[in-house]
Image (tube, rainbow, N blue to C red):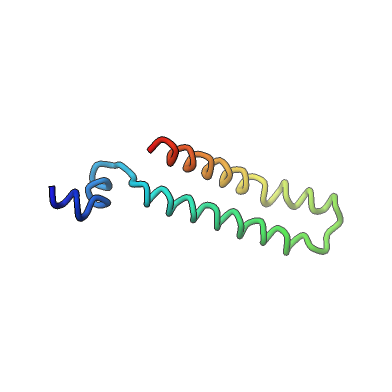
Length: 82
């Protein structure tokens, strides 16, 4: 009982269960990574024409952004189900 009370994160980890705080931490990391990705795109595309921006987004950023957005949605749903 004491180990559950004082070190629940470790017990959850042993059982393969993620705690709410672990999910929130991963969610925050994913949001920060998406924000950084968007900032990088804006910096890189600042001097480009519209069609060049579209090509840059499609070729270099879209897949990663979509992946991160999907991950964020999954984590938000996981939090709702706790």
